[in-house]
Length: 248
Image 1: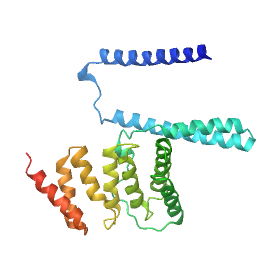
Image 2: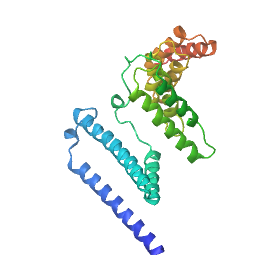
Image 3: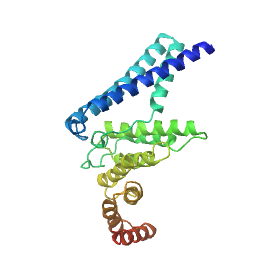
Image 4: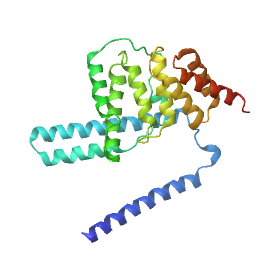
């Protein structure tokens, strides 16, 4: 067993060395002025390919697990389930937010019972868990369900609620994806201008303190003073507007 573990670690080290060597060769042989710019068409195609690959991999594992369950092969069904769990545990970056976050023109208007039920289920997982692993697993479960609402029911009156909860999840210690979080907070009040959530000020704080985009932060703080009724939020926004306006 010790010999086998040594072999596995040796193989892993060799693979890592090969990947690093390839990356170094790419860096050494590609002139800086000939590198494709970030945000170009080529980048979009590559990110779309990655997103499709992730989706297809998940679907393949789910279908394989179902197949083994129907066949009564519980051992292999458990293998597929464990691989699926590990896939969901991997933190996945949204390399292009325009491919991740739905557009701002959606309207949270229609009462759809199925979307309501998905939202209810998601909230049973969100922020739950005694251990760090359990907490992260539950955040992942909630994320998947909230994203299902946006994908399957973009006309639902729950999309603004789902966007707010996704913002909170992406801001949480399980993700710390602050730009992604800020944009979902923005979608919350863009899809429902009368939202009762504190989405505007939470987005403003992220642009202010984490993303260093203070002009956008000031815009949102100003919106807080004209749209909010909570005196504490208004006072915080006014204070930051004054402080940021005084900075050069």
